[in-house]
Amino acid sequence: MIASVEPGGPADRDGVLLGDVLLELGGAEVSDPTDVLVQLGGDRVGQPIAARVIRGGQVKTLQVTPGERPESRAA
Image 1 (cartoon, rainbow, N blue to C red):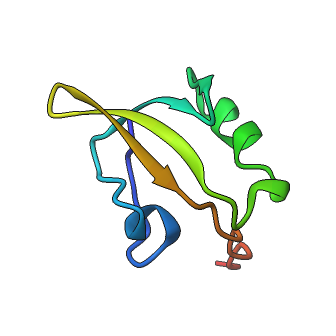
Image 2 (cartoon, rainbow, N blue to C red):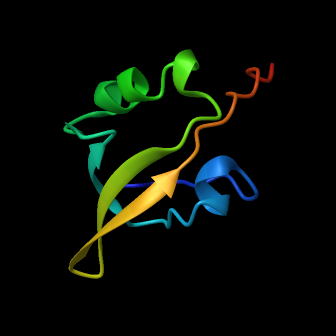
């Protein structure tokens, strides 16, 4: 389940919503966060990828375009 979406970030711009349940990314089944990281590797930045989600009980397919990950901010 999508637990956070960065306002103005790539997922937000592409229509990903809090509470969406991610089923597939780039045609590969997603069962844990590691699966997402594998599909969103650096070579995918800027290239559209299909994301299948469950939203409101219905399966939807979104086109998402991964962006660069921001540098970690020191606390």
